[in-house]
Image 1 (cartoon, rainbow, N blue to C red):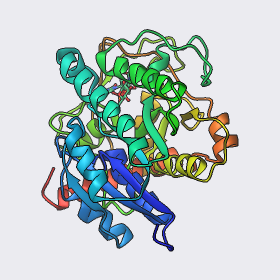
Image 2: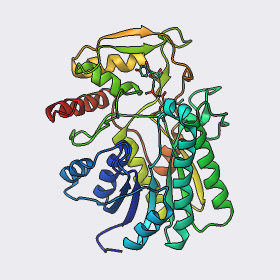
Image 3: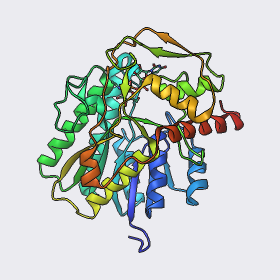
Image 4: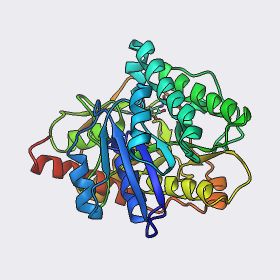
Amino acid sequence: MNQTMKGKILVTGGTGFIGSHTTVELQQAGYEVVIIDNLSNSNIEVLDGIERITGVRPVFVEGDCTDRAVVRRLFEDNPGINGIINFAASKAVGESIEKPIMYYRNNINILLNLLELMPEFGVKGFVFSSSCTVYGEPDKNPITEDAPTKKATSPYGATKQICEDIIHDVIRSGSPIKAILLRYFNPIGAHPSAEIGELPNGVPQNLVPYLTQTAIGVRKELSIFGDDYPTRDGSCIRDFINVVDLAKAHVKALERMLEDKSDEALEIFNIGTGNGTSVLELLHSFERATGVKVPHKIAPRRPGDIVQIWADPKRANEVLGWHAEISLDDTMLSAWNWQKRLRERGIM
Ligand code: UD1
């Protein structure tokens, strides 16, 4: 290991939304990063953004982790990898209902290849991107990690549950690795530099990219899916977590495993703010933070939506020493600055 470096980390899906922000935080914390991405849902120019922020261009391998030979070659060509953060996965809920085989094949094969090759190449720590979707509709909020998981409502959600189970079983079999499952709530926003952010393909399915694209005039009107839910203002409630805060949780998780701060081989953490925010409250936060009015209308409920869920992040706060720090208004402003940057570059 390079003496000035803390370790070498493989970030799969590292040019994606959360992967790129995590790469920045890893580099700024003193880690060397190797990215593998097949660019199926991201752009090579993300590497320029990362370099502009940190001054360091991560090693980049264009490749598909569902191909075990590709992953093997990556480990051979980049010796000394200490940890993996696995972002590479298909992640659109609606698409997964139409293409279940693609979702199961991608998300599960990627995981199996990495877990299988880790011991052979002496890789110690594994961080898995899980989701609050594993909880289904909670009986009670805020939700803790000990709450029961419920049957997934989409193949996407099912892959998160299955992947969590696979990691459990591999650890139980005595594999000499450590793993941390991070259950993300709703990641939003962008790096404050506006050098990197979220860039969905086509019409966004998620709330914040749809909102910012409406604010800048790419979309005519934001639909609020339902105002007759049993919540304080009738819209759904989520725990919106700033992507830079979320990225920092990965650095803490890796440090915990690589520095042997725990005796447990497998741990699970909720990564959220602990605050429930309604869809309408989020819209108002955007308008307040940016001064920009967003055309919107109330539309029917979206099938499959959870009514309300927010995290109890106490375990992450106490055990990882991680806290969400960035306010919702600042987060909305960062999303807007990123959207404006895309416009300046003629991308959107
Ligand atoms: C979903 C997934 C989650 C996944 C995340 C990121 C489930 C239950 N949730 O979260 O696992 O990690 O996507 O892909 O599978 N909304 C509108 N108008 C819009 C878009 C959304 O009102 O144009 C509302 C939705 O109805 C919802 C809230 O905004 O109440 C958040 O929606 P979205 O951003 O799509 O995330 P989730 O569905 O919470």
